Image (cartoon, rainbow, N blue to C red; front, side, top):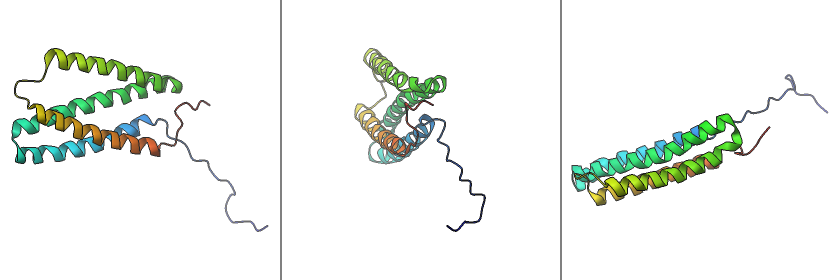
Length: 146
């Protein structure tokens, strides 16, 4: 059998330390691109209150989902198997917290309801597309313990 030149040693590839931060980065990129496109288009079609309402909604959506990924990152650094339970617990707390804030305070007087809903839907779909793409490319199993 012929020998090839070289040391004969093949180094193993290293999995990323965390899947949560790359997911956050890609999701944030998608949501920011969609929100950045939404603002000038809605300002031209409707008005500044409509566009600003969409940006307020996008900021809430981005903050809502980014917080969960950051909690998962922090819990995963302590113990990798804690990441998903922490992510789910943070999601439940965020849902009730956001519902409480929106139901008790409502939208600001200047906000346009239709712009708010459209802006949140656009940023939500963009965030989820980025999140799905990032998770699908993740090479690290969430519950893999060594």
